[in-house]
Structures are given as structure tokens and as C-alpha cells.
Image (cartoon, rainbow, N blue to C red; front, side, top):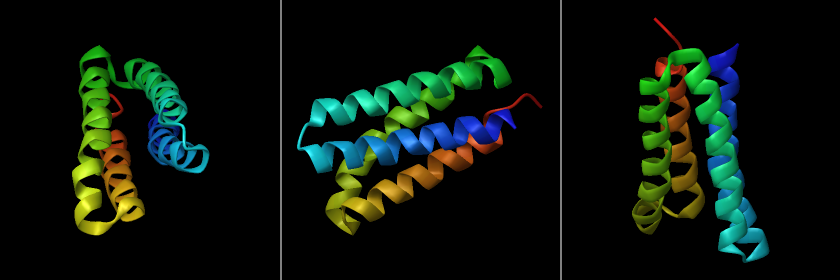
Length: 99
């Protein structure tokens, strides 16, 4: 159950962070949502998969956020957010647990 919850938390951070920033016009508030969910996901990843994998998945989470910006210029904002969220969720499900 742990990998599913961490995957959902990471997804909520990416989608919720963007929605918060967009709806409020406050990018810092959106960033706070993104950071809080990422920190929570890190704790769960570390518990379920160890520190190394948690660090790698957190790096992927941050990279997904960064990659969503140039991708949005090609496919649009929401499709970009959904694409990077799906990739992050899949990575979390695959690598967010001990083998």
C-alpha cells in the first residue's frame, strides 16, 4: 500500500501545485504545495524503498516539475502537467518499494 500512497502524494503535489498557482495567481503558494507534497513523498519513499531510491525519486519529482515548463510550450499547460505526473507516478510505483 505504501508505494500507492507515495505515488498519489507525488501526483497530488504536481497537479495541486500547478492548480494552486494558476487559481490563486501566487506561484510561491503553488511551490509550497509542490514542496510539501514532495517532502511527504520523500518520507514515504525512504520508509518503503530506502534513502537512495527516495533521493532518486525526489530528483525525478523535481525534474518532472522543471520539464513541465518547456513541455507546456509544445503541448499546453494541463497536458504537460498530466504527462509529467503520469511519468512520476509510474516511477514511484516501480521504484518506490524494496525489491
